Length: 274
Image 1 (tube, rainbow, N blue to C red):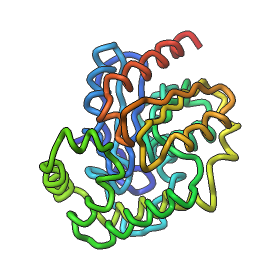
Image 2: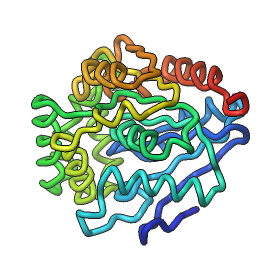
Image 3: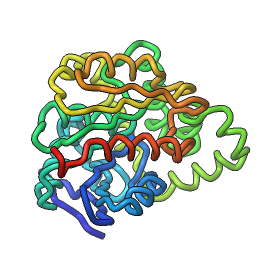
Image 4: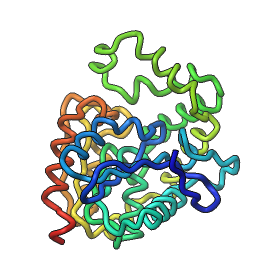
């Protein structure tokens, strides 16, 4: 498996396809495999797709020092990865925590970003979201995989998605998160996210100068559309779209819609034409 050493941490990454590079950034509990439907779609259209597990996630190293987890550290890891791959300009896409990393990266490292797509993310934390994240944190701190999954399953997926996949969804998720996933690192990542309450990204959004697509999900119980609307309002050159009948995990629930919106936006902002 390919790894990059970034600030002493091993970062697992994948690169597939050829053409203009598209970077896909994970949410906290995601892996590179979570993007399969987007990765295959983009590769078929002639794009180079770059994915990585952030520090603390799945195949990447899981530092024991909590201070090594932050949005800033993830942004630095991404910069180091792009430099390692000799990629100078990308279409940047992030969902949830990955969207938050993407916004910080776009504000801080403008020269790398051609355009930005932010999916079901936030730039600040209100009390409703703080309480949700605290519940997830307690689930991670329990060090019990089933309790951990139960702490967030009903938030992440819409009712229709849970009904569609039935009672077996819980057992499948417990099995998945029992292999290669660190609950301790998940807790550190959640604590990193919670820092947005005292240090929101919202004041930085005016510094994002690239075309930006902001996607929300109508039935998102974690980061409902009100948060995406804040982002769209604050980013100068942004377009807002709300996907109906989908929850927070919209890239899994409505992959065709996400792919249509994402690729249409990317195509309209070709790197070669800018």
